Length: 166
Image (cartoon, rainbow, N blue to C red; front, side, top):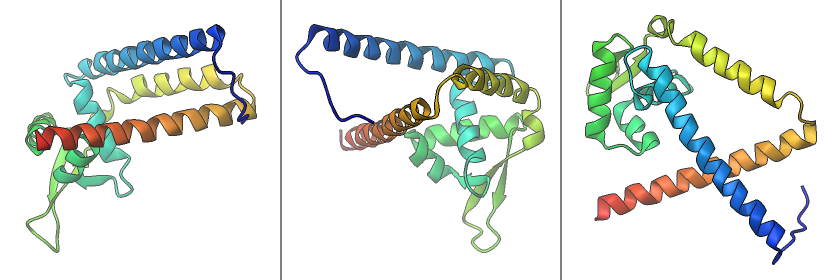
């Protein structure tokens, strides 16, 4: 990746503005795409993102407190989401065998059958989109996405901390 930057040019300012506009458009469309997919099974985008957080946990289960930390949502909001997901059969609460006070949340994978094909199609569409990029272009995209993800995590943590202080 080049460290050379063109500064002070109108063209660069235009490009940065366009990148910001595209990022906002992508973010908005992604939120609504997840909402539309979630609604097909009677859930919200937040519900399906919480399911994804559970599924991507190394042990395929987590606690409500950990979900609150990862999502930036309050423990009360997470409890409400988990109650709704449990009632609909998407998750199961499991008590820790060593510490009965601790409750883990596990996704009932069979409950995902109606939504898996939709997310699989989304993944295939993304894969088709990026297949034409060279390896070096993909590395640049990886770098950008990793840095944006890290930035979002920091900004979310800052926002959560500010909310708790205020």
